[in-house]
Image (tube, rainbow, N blue to C red; front, top):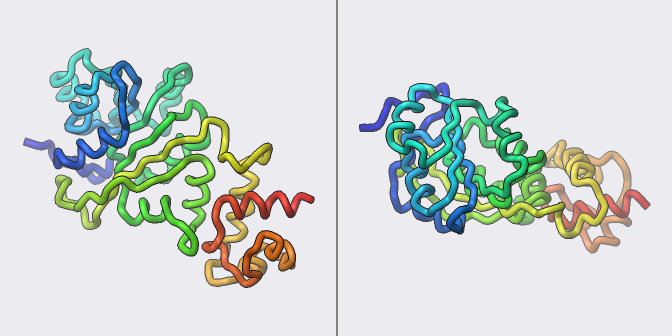
Length: 256
């Protein structure tokens, strides 16, 4: 019997074994690798991670789930009662490790989790996350459907949607479908960045997306029609029509 889900923690427990196996397959875990799981909940995904032979470090915020997890897994996992976003000591423990992040994360902390593990050390080599389908579509988008979230994620990682997971795969059943995404983080930075700070590109993109219905040159506040032409882009283009590579090249041209 599943415990009662708490809205305060954004809990929707994954119960579908097919979805779990798709997560495991996407993670491509080798025996002995370290895997960091956020929010093990009832341990369904945790069990599959343990079965791969990985070293599993799991952090759970809900104190009522700690005892059942300890009883189920004992010393087969390293279980931490804490908050991933505020407990810095947990992250410091990962600083000397090569690890993968695998999690069915609460929808309400998707953005902070992405920002934290994409931009700040320690960074995983790969993230396999269950997120809302709409968010997955935005993360993996291509022109002309890019967004600021697309730019941020794709500048730090190679992003791919693995599978759609219907709402019925969870208890309680959420109102929307979910999706499994894989983010393979670039070791240093996006291959096209060279010596450009990724945050410089993101800052430029924020200006570009400041008013969605306006043309890019209007949002950026200066006339760079010729610069867009140099990149082979329509001078009337909007921000959602640019790839990460376009933003990088635009930044380089503007710095000349």
